[in-house]
Length: 234
Image (cartoon, rainbow, N blue to C red):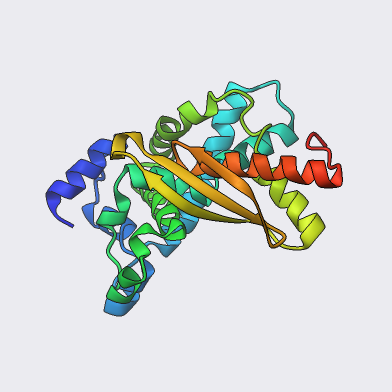
């Protein structure tokens, strides 16, 4: 990764690493590190996951002091998931910056949700390691504050509710498939199809993959509610 790419990433994050080697490690996938005997971001991802949970919990409790533990847990789950984290990583262009083995790259590693989400967590872990919790918390707040402001955050998390229902009825999670993507980078539209219990139960459209999946999950829940008389508000 070139120095200019370091600087651009740090500017986007609003944080400058005192240890540039640590930032390089944050964007080094395990496949690259093991191939060359170099340090990689796996343990930083582990650390970043814990930092993210704490920082988001802190943010939610300060914004919604009246909410119950159950409400806060659902709200956090709607924010801290691989889809959301991958979207944050995409905004940082982490996919293009990642160092990974050629085989992983050929298999589409730069766009894999799990790898992008892990890279974003590794960045947070690196910031914590380099500058402490307060530095990491500020970055988390910068990237999640607007999400937290959404009305009824977490209380209408259709994906989480659908997963619960799908496991109960079919012993398997729902499957989401991106079927269309259109528009320029600054105004993307995504269409997602959802399969529950072996049946396509609808499509959702949105400005992000997360929004499209939520819309698809909402329609699937409505279909299941109509067919099986499931109470969505349970």
